[in-house]
Structures are given as C-alpha cells and as structure tokens.
Image (cartoon, rainbow, N blue to C red; front, side, top):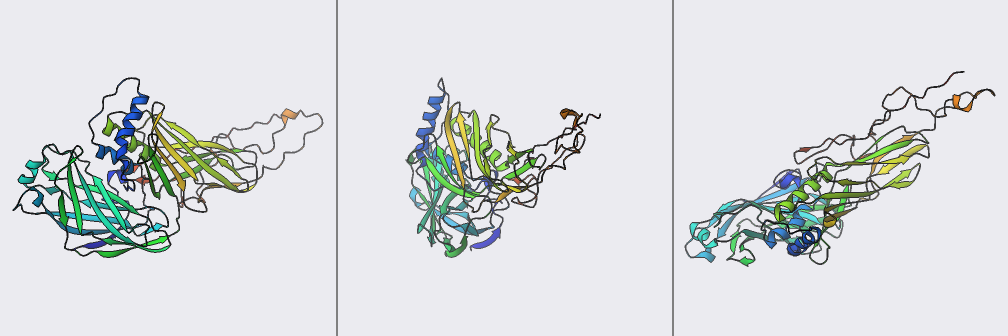
Length: 461
C-alpha cells in the first residue's frame, strides 16, 4: 500500500549526495560527453588520461550537481511510498518477478513559474541469475517514470536518471538509485501531481546499446498530491547551468533556496568604512561537489573557481556592492568574500542579499561549468541592516596658537584597541544571520571581518 508522510525537505532520501536536490529538466544533456572533453582538450597542453564514462553518466552530471544545496528553510516535503513488482519476461519465460520499493518526494509549497523538483528513489533489486547472465557488459541502467500533473505547464513530467553505482560485470542487481524530474506551475493556487506512477521502467545499457527493458508495476492507485503555489520568499534563486560553451542540450534551468549570510564589521558612522562579508556554506559545497564529480567522471581535475555577485545598497544611502573571489582550493568547505562600503548618510543603510551571483569552474583558463543564478524573490530580502550615526560631537575649538595637528579629528574612534562593530544581527534572513549554517552534515564556520580600532592620541599643549 502507498503511504504519504510529511518531512523536512533536506532529509534523506531527497537530500542524498550531500543534501543536493537533484532535478533535471534537460535530459538532452548527453551532449556533455562531447562538450566537456573538448574543453579539456583546449585547456590542456598535453593529452590528459581520462576514466571511461558512458555518455549517459556524463549527461547526468550537470542536472545532478548544479542544483543549489537546500537547507532547513526549504518548504516541508511530502513523500509517497509504494511497492512494485518487476517483470523479467524480456529475458525468458518463467522468471519469478522481484519486489522493488519506490519513494517519491516533492515540496509541499513552491513558487509560481519555477521548476519544482520531484525525486524518485528506488530500492536495490536482486536480479535472477537468468537475467544477470544476459547482462554481460552492462555498465549502467536508466530508470524512468512519467508523473501526470494538473495546472502545470506540462501534463506529463518525466522523472529519470542513470545509476551512479559501479556495476559488477555482469550486474547482479539493480542498485538503489535517485532519479529526478521537475514540474512548473504557471499560476498561483494549487498544483497537483498524481502519485505513485503505475509503471517504472529500467533499461540496462552496455555503452550506448540498450538491452531488454524491465517493467516494474504497482497495484497502488495514484492519488492527487497538492502543492501550494505562491510567490517566492527568502533567498530563492533561479539558476541557469551551462556546460562548456553552452548551446543546445548543454544548459539546464533549475531553482531553489540557497542560504547566504551577510555580515559587517567596522564603525557605523558617517565618513567611516565598513567591511561587508558575504558567506555561504552552500556555495562552498557546490564548488566542492562539482569539482569532485567532474574529476570522478572525466579523470581531469579542475584548477579553480571564480565567484561574482551583485548586491544592492538601499535605505539612507544607495549604491551597489560587487563582491568577487577566486577559489584555488576546490576542497575548501568554507566560503566568504568581503568588500568595503563607505558610509555617507546617517540612518539605516540596508545591504540586500545578492540579486545575482555566479560560480564558474575552470580548467586553466577554460570555463567547464558555469552556474548563474538570479534572485526570484521581490523585493530582495535585506541581508544586513547598518544603523549609521553622525560623527561624535566636535572637539573644543583650538586656541589661535594651537597647531592644527594637535587637535583630535572630529569623529575620532573611541577605545584603545577594542574591537568595534560586531556583525549585525538585524534585518537578515534569520534572527542571527552571522550564525554559521549547517547543511548536509557540513558544519562550516563563516569567517566575518573584524576591525580593531586605532587609539587616537591627543597631543596636549
């Protein structure tokens, strides 16, 4: 019998693979198997040995990895579980069917006009000896199912993916596998997907050659599952991911919440300069996983990643910040970048979370994967609120005989080496945006800027 439960969207099996929600809308990304090696060849002065990888596994790399890491702020997800009977009649008569469990996961709420993830996880299924012996040379298996929907831009959503586990030769089982698809709802209100699907297909692949398919069917009737469709809130981004030079079949559009923190250090006073730090364990984890998977799939380690962002400054003064960074340690599990902001007006100065940001992974000087994200939420959430004051009261006027250098400058900082201006905790995405965020088991300490003031001594007459 099928069952429906509610759970946090960042828990397993949805957030398997370090908490990624892995959803693909562009299944034609098999072209990556041509684009990525071409980029490697251009960037490398000498031939680089590569591991063997089927086009199917390479084609799954972009949609499987270039998805924002989802945190506890993500809407609650629902799951539907059903039991399936797998038929092996394509491999001979009289083979006893095997039982497979399948779990579907989807958010309980999602923004309008944004691709919503639907994930299907199948359990491992032992293959009868008659089937296993016929699969010599099979290196992967393609899992697919079709989810029907209502009030969506497409009536049918393909949920599919290839096995990532290394298979024995010949395979002795269908391994546990996560597959992904996505539905987009074009109007606010209620979206519907029907789960569980009646049939899940398994197609063994020997390179690009398909073997006889395996059909797994369920007796559990599909039921409509409702999703609340409304405006985006919080740090919700729409991201376009591109392999190599892009083009047809090498881009995918994905969306989801992406946690960022904005902190500041320095004296909040007109005429002073504060350091604004943008940090994100999600960005760090995205770089780590993308680089590791490209290395695993192609045998070619990437050399660096670049990051850029645009952040609006509003309130008492207006402007923009453009923080950037170059990451050469692609295993670093922390990420932050800072930029200075000159304070020119008293009052509350707000620094919004990035309106856009991008991560570009490079092999030497050649771009291999680019993830460019745009904020969906309007207006942009405030990441940091700076309460700026006027300078301190003017010091007593100097006598006619007093030299200009002997008077303390107006607005001199107070204190003797004491840190001034701890990171703000108001106006951000959470009650304390400077508190490090935990995601997928990664506990990352985001390093904010610290400012130690200079004691300003006064020469006395």
